[in-house]
Length: 617
Image (cartoon, rainbow, N blue to C red):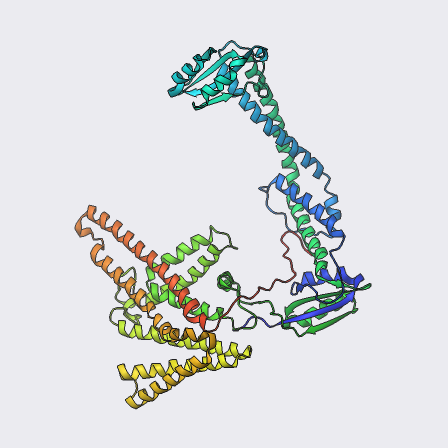
């Protein structure tokens, strides 16, 4: 329970002729993580067929991107026996690529038509034939300028001796068409450099004839282009009926490609292959049966003793997977140490619930977290954090009931009868309980550290863990006896002596961890923040209720005003409580608890497996 799954490294020797059936069988089983074989043999390499499969996969991916996902419902799973052959049976692939090239060409042409149409609109009403704007002596230019610089533009152009024809384009800009001697082009360009004007390309595609002829031609060409685009769209829609069939072929090709490429991890002789990998020890019987069936008994399997750190595999109910995600986000547990995730799963909701401890805030947390899960990626950090938050909200509701807190109000009747503690009246007891909780969890962390040290044969460090536990236990008895009379004086004095001796032993044996000795004193006390933040949230809620609880006796306007303030302040208090509850709950686990034993830095178990969505075996 407190460790990742026990793993076993295996080596399999089989005939080269059985390679594909063996790899396929293990791929389907999905419980072996292949590793590069480290023996002095020839590399097996990827199967030559991988190139063909990869080419087909690239083409299928291209078709899927071009067609886009249809609105049709999925038509169930397909059975694909020969994915390469199935891909070759799709006869419209080349047609789709050709249509896509044509569609892109038309789309680019439509942009040119749009630009030409804009120029035609600009020059509408001006007697000009664009086809004749060519001269050995004159240069023809056109510009669009904002109205505020029109006068400055006329002045700059006038100084060059150019002929100007202008037209007002709406209220804010002008069109200037100029004809000037070619030898004055450079001077004109220099004059306009400082002005924010847009030069119009009179040599752009389709610019020919008079403006009216140009606009007529553009209208006709646009009509043809739009018609052809609609025809292509209809053809795509027809091909899109095969979309889910294409997805099935893609999935089958990806599975086949993974099998072919897995050979790069293997070694071979003239007639045999050698493969290695990690697998859960409890699945070994199943693995042997699978290999035996795939090779008709022609194989040799060896369980290898290895100093290599095994990959980490955790098996937990699906609703608790978000906690594993968060742990992996921080650091993957090592396979040779205690996995603290179960303690985190239990303690974090308790910490959060105590620091919120209000039914109203808990319900709001639950609803908000649920809303986030419906709008975020199930594979992302936000989604998984929201799932944890939603679970913790139930804890906040539970402790809110036990403390009789409902948006800061304490209710009577049946609600008061289930109240177990009062944050105000039992503040001293609560702080003692939270510190005691910290002492227990820190000691638990040291126990885990002792177990890990023994497992790693770190004897001195293991002794320091035991002495640290002794120091905390007897130090607590000494302080409790000296200041709170929890134990008789003689016992307190003996406890103090044992605590001091344990402190010295810890310093002597802890080695590089000796610098952490002060944390053994401060970390248990750090758990008092549970009581501090919880009490703070309760007091703020009470103050909000006393100062701004709405009442109709004050009149409708004040009732509305106080209601708005009441909701806003409780919302702010709730958000602050949620933030502190989450941050401090994580801190108490990762800083005060995990540092006593947890190293992390493991590698997640990634078996050679696949998930079928669109195909079936």
